[in-house]
Amino acid sequence: MSRVAVVTGGASGIGLATAQHLAAAGNRVAVTDLSQERCDEAAAAIRADGDEAVGVAIDVADRAAVAAGFDRVRAELGPVEILVTSAGIESFDPLAEITDEIWDRVIAVNLTGTFTCIQHAVADMTEGGWGRIVTISSSSALSGAPRMAHYTASKGGVISLTRSMAVEFARAGITVNSVAPTVVDTPMAKQATEKGDFPGVEVIAPMIPMGRAGTPDDIAAACAYLCSEEAGYTTGQILAVSGGMYI
Image 1 (cartoon, one colour):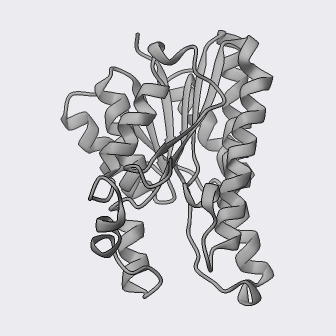
Image 2 (cartoon, rainbow, N blue to C red):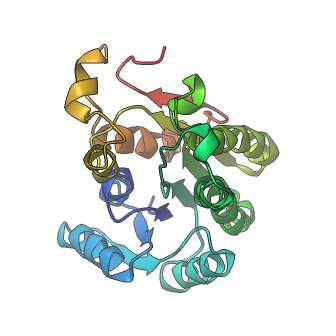
């Protein structure tokens, strides 16, 4: 059955791969990200494969932008039935150097942005009696990470939010789960390496039991399953797609 899916942070990396997987499964996908141009490029690439997609610029840290963006999705595709919250940012800072501005920005995008998008999607799902929500958390929120107290706090909040929403909306036919990646070869990881904040995917990969870093498709495949009809009895779960790094 074709559903309307929204993927935040959908113009690159995990978000783009997830949008492609959901579209290939027959869903009508809204690709959202900060740049309208990049959203349009991603949506055009999906349409080139014969699938249906539109691009909608949304800054998840801006409540008004989220509201306007979801209204546009409804106008162009219909009520939202699937939501994957892939939009997120990283920051690497010693605890003593985390300023109010850095802390607020990380929380605003990763945690509050996730909450705001869920809040704007869940009414459609409740009315339709069916919904799939998948948040993107992080394996670092399960283990902790140095110089990332703000990031792990935000992603830990996403995990708690996921569990709470799963309980609240289970009787409404809505499942809420989270995928917690570990090291994934994405543009974000490359940027962190270039800045000297991360040693590099090729350095960490041998430490992973499966001997390689994750790919965006690895994460997208897990998201696509959790968004499917077959995952209707799975809710409130945190799926660590980590190559065995966290067991």
